[in-house]
Image (cartoon, helix red, strand yellow):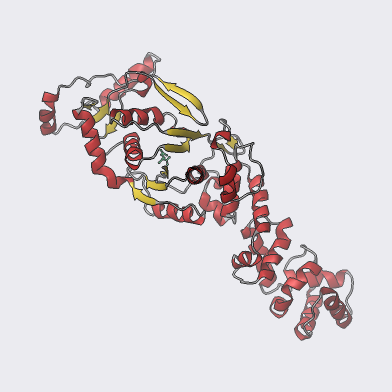
Length: 436
Ligand code: GLU
């Protein structure tokens, strides 16, 4: 079982989308279910509506899931499991105040050693629990640190051994009774039977903690992990909100096709892909997650543009025309003529819009444009460009630049572009509307 576990705390980052795509893809390869878990336990960071937005994005990218739930629905289960650890002596009540913890941190800093929990509350006797609860003094639950190293074989990062002190005795239930991320995540993966976890490498240090929680809860299923390297921007820094292209919403608004974005993200850090242009269903047949490089990959918008263009070329003409509010394969073909100079649907739309909008006659070719427009409005339907050109030239007496420049402006709304002889057959049935 695989899962995508987004936090509804902001616009979906391409790194998250990559995680979703890979979990979906591996689930397909293994013929196992793919589920969605909205990790909404951090109430202060949740943003209303982001959960719906995430689901809409998954739908746009055609990543169907078996089921979806909000992690907060499991609050009582998380609490019950935390208390079970307490009862089994695998967790303890900690009443350390934030001031005490801060002082411990400062002391470690002064000694230039890594901060570890002091162990101050580890031996609070169970007989004191009731009195403690009755006193109203705030407390958290901490899991005891492990007795031995935690070893994890990561499919991308290799073998990673974490010493007990590094795992440390960490908080699993906060003073307000809510679970921490690591605890909720480990419990839910266990309860859902998730045993293959693909996520960003920012979670690498959480893995031993989550494995420790599951072991202490008596879960014996070994999970497979793959932690994906971060994505860097062009200046070699981690792609952040400040980089427009890090937002999936932005990429879609700019006119990158979901299929092209998927194609690009599956190529990131993967030099062993057998081809450059492909769809997700094709990749399911050959993709190997272990081929992803363990070092960071650089996001290259020009490469994405190239891939987008290739997917646009392959798109069904009529389906493409729908993006410009037509249902006419000729308009799809017309858009494809512009793929030399445009690479997104937004850029193509501006070309198509320029053709269909009322023309601007305020330029050096005003007189000629008016004349040609009149002739087009009164001309019979002419099938091919040569006959059309001969007819208008003859009737107008214009030739050379004085004919072609105004004709192009009138037909395309632009001074430059693809050959008029290629454009004409695709727009001839709209000539009266276009030449106006
Ligand atoms: N909610 C976490 C995130 O969005 C993912 C946790 C996980 O995959 O384990 O980064």
